[in-house]
Image (cartoon, rainbow, N blue to C red; front, side, top):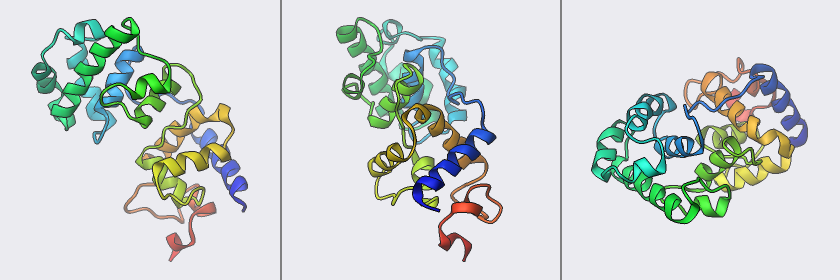
Length: 211
């Protein structure tokens, strides 16, 4: 198979397995999504979904969030890990959203990435899932699977993102990045993976997977 043929196979198989896609982080609007994605760094979606209701019960808007002490935010989000950094980031981004964006989460990559604790991947998730802008957020699952499926050399997440954007139609990116994440968790884990039983690796996986 050529790389484009592999990409086409992956797209068909994932659409068959996951016809409907919804972001696994519970959210109600761009702000709650942004906060949830910030919390998800080095933390499971399940744990984030356990903690966000506690945080949003106290503050679910930028206006409410800036009224909390950073320490109060930190105490609530501690189970998500990296709480000192994340609490400062959430408080800081809320303040900037109020001061520079009239209380609305900005809908450009540049403005989002200028916020505390918001990198390119977080901005990509918000742009794609909150605003419907074509984006291809690359997390560890996608980075790993793109290499495993020989769709990218996998030298960096930036490299992987560029490779995947060339292979897949732009109008598929928003759903596809979620489908790859779902597939990685269910069928294609980093450890204990049997490539011969994998619905995708068994067709297009790297040769070393079968040694």
